Image 1: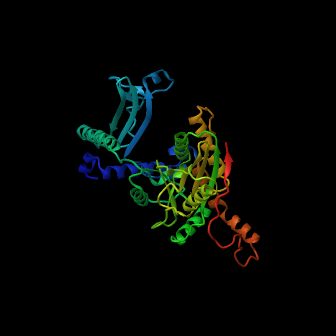
Image 2: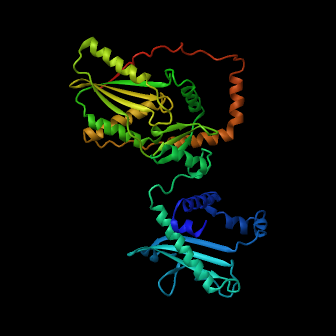
Image 3: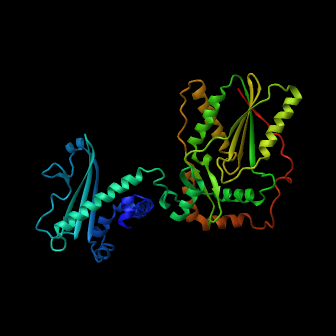
Length: 409
């Protein structure tokens, strides 16, 4: 980077910060095992000892408060009240590095104070050279803080999105494609999701057989606004419900999760028609929603339609893509939706159980796939031995039937 890149606190500086972040993330266990391997492991120690000693040693001791001064261990204080990590060094010993930097942050009544202590080999570096380097170091730190405060700074890096295997270039391409929404995560797809995405993309002009619809009859007084707010809270609670699905230009498809999405919500008043006509119009609304395809890259892949049938009679349509929900997860989502509604409409304080993040399952699945792929393939080959073709489990797709509603009071 040039000095202009630093002082401008622009994209080049942001890319440098991301590179350093990835280098630090790549160190196993944050480097805690190095000393054990270097000095106590008879097999690895000699190999590490044979490596050249770095010219620069950097040690950041962490962040403390003034109250921590009463703790059993604190970095030693300097004469001027600052904090020094190397105060106990023996002046008679040769320096471990040509240049050493020890830094610590202390939260004071005036705000956080960063103190840096420099030591160097006097036969190699001069005091003016170290002073110049120290001033440059703090200037770069100020530029980094200015960059971090700017809109659009930061973003995801490869270590954030594992087990998705993406380069920084691909991540930034996805971030640009999803703009102005900021991405909070990027996830791989399960094998089943990859198959569902293939079928969703196979024929964009036909009815998507994996658009699923649930109809609920709601009897009794209903607070429309509270229900809508509950649905919005549901999207915040379950990040994977906000996912969009991308495949073009990628080795494997991914699901990109925006930090926020707008809830597709509409309300329809069908109180005037009665009897058969009302039922026909309700079926027509449901069929229109069911036949309207989702664009995989335009999240969320779900829609809610609240239909008013009477003063205290409503019908709620949840239309979603099978990429998001299956029969096991749908009851969890509906339970959360109605608990969130009660908390808003009735002043309830019922706590929802902690969310089990979909990311956790995908990470587990990736680790299992890497560890047990061979055994799994062998087991399934034995189970499917003798199967010569696909098994038809449903008739050819025709006009979708009207959903069979569930009733809730």
